[in-house]
Amino acid sequence: MVADLQAHRWRAELAVEEIPSPQRIAPYAVAIAADVSLREHDLGSGRLVILHDPAGVESWQGQFRAVAYAKGEVDPEMVTDTMLAEVGWSWLVEALEANGADYIAPSGNVACTWSRSFGGMEEQPARAEVEIRASWTPRLSPTGEGVTAHLNAFAELLANTCGIPPLPEGVVMMTPLRQRRQDR
Image 1 (cartoon, one colour):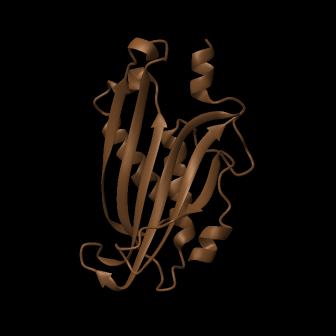
Image 2 (tube, one colour; image 1 turned 180 degrees about the vertical axis):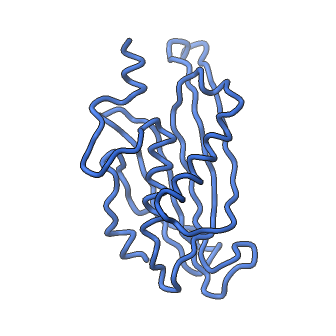
């Protein structure tokens, strides 16, 4: 599984690196961090941890658990929409399903925030962000085969969180959507 993760071909907008994984949650774990950027515009970030306990964990309902975090800027008008949290959660579920990732027991939360700066920071623009924290039990072989679908789903979740639409392999966006709106 670790070899599949290290050899994974990520979307062009993601800069991914392996990071230290938590040591006390499961006997085995691997973790990555990803920054999302497009044409030198930072759009968001995320992390994915895959935990493995060969004995299984009752609350996981299996031997593996994927734990994901995705954060991205959204248009300020979006954060006032009471459905944004549901939409954010649907990005996860749809990404898992669209990539053929077999899973059970999803859980998590979606936070939508808006902030405005004052005083010495007053000239900074208002920010609106969506943050998704989720976990699910990937149904993998005992050696971790099948993880690629979950990695692709994580990449799609990050892209959706940052406003990057799904694109066929080999196609890239010319200009980030949010940057285009800001330039108007």
